[in-house]
Image (cartoon, rainbow, N blue to C red; front, side, top):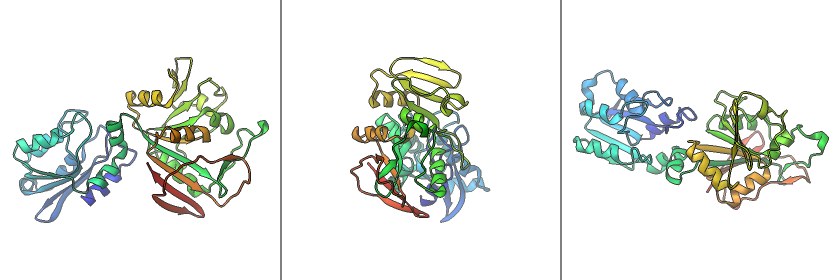
Length: 337
């Protein structure tokens, strides 16, 4: 099962809206086939594992390990249960039960009805954690929320900006940390900031310092203050501007009226629009609003050796550090809610 998880991780950021799944086929304590789901619309992990087995006659005497329950419904690909039944694989070991209502135990039931011996809950905690975005989306009916910010050693996230300084970003962390952030962007469905971040920094909010897809951009802009010259307004990347007054579709830009204008309404919209995960990158007020509403699942906080002595204080998060990493002097702390 651990090998299934390692295989599944290879597709981090590539399978949305599908989960990450790896599969291993074992015959007489020897791995004879393995595969993983590489991208939505392509073959699932079980099919890739079955296809990798040179001698298909061995499948009827083998055990299939997979970190998520095999699907039993037709989507962009046929149900994996059908292929398992076709090759008469007698035993299936599963990590997590699929939370998607289209599956949710139906895959296991279909296998058992055809005479397959099924076990589940093997490395369940690890399997659930790997697909935490997928599980949160289907169980809580909202995106998985990641909060991210960088702070100085004296807990400031930015200096106080004067009007003639807007657009000039004060970089707190180093290039290695910046690259890591861009990797994260490529792993999530969407990225979110408040309008003040756009006004102050004019960020692109794209994945530039590494390979990866650009996330969908979400801007909280209640009074429609996004400058017409800003990068998010003028490029061709899809962007949603949430506001209190207008509904407009303008090429790749969409203005969406939230009524009421609050995070609950935002979560409802994102769930209905199939936005499975969001990384929230600023500013301080926006991040704090998510914290105060207890609408977050994971926080990633960089702390550099730099000091500001004054400026905008970092968000307040009352949570214990789960784990830490070091990036050439920048300390990265992970928190889970």
